Image (cartoon, rainbow, N blue to C red):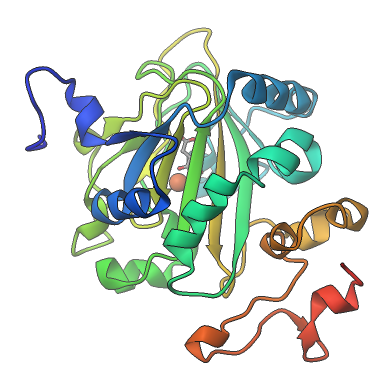
Length: 298
Ligand SMILES: O=C(O)CCC(=O)C(=O)O
Ligand SMILES: [Fe+2]
């Protein structure tokens, strides 16, 4: 149990620290580097959450609750038997595209955490995750395991990915709040993902964000209710020199992309990834030039 626990505060509020949404990006980055995650309270307004939910509702309705079409055992487990997962959220939601993704606070936090190791970053995925009644706990994992070599490299590796897990309904321990093992980012052996007993639930209100790095062990919680649906969006940014989970550059229509600012176009893979400050090459180019030029983006 954390040393910061005091009789007046619930341990759950101290073990995953909670800070207001207007906390400085530097402070947020420091907490994430220390604990592996932090809760940013009241980040998005009720109105934003409500509009977002309304925009994605029809898309979710059309989805099967079988997690994903993947028939590989570990992915079936990972994606859940009664969980809906909606991808390509940039295309589906105007509120996400124009407000959440362009929120200067989000970009400043991502800058603080990712620009020290690369000159540009991308959104590897934006996925709505609706955990339904009876769904088992998701296996504990670190998000950097998407690129498994990092598992072998362990805690001394740079943090290459961050996840802004946003609550779209209130999270409770019973309905499947994400579970986190704070500090597991510093464990020596990344083959060790910890045990359910070591986890703490991220108790969020709709609009709060659980921001985690790629190094902390966590997983979606079990939904023990008979009638509640826990809805979240996991949207993750990774440095530009890793392949992203979602191929946004092939999924988001170019006409839509033309309406977005250059930094967002870059985040979606419609501009090249630079590494000049580290004396690295430019990646994802066309004829040695920025693909934005090839695509005639302004
Ligand atoms: O649904 C959740 O609470 C966790 C999702 C997650 O860990 C992920 O998408 O990487
Ligand atoms: Fe995860």
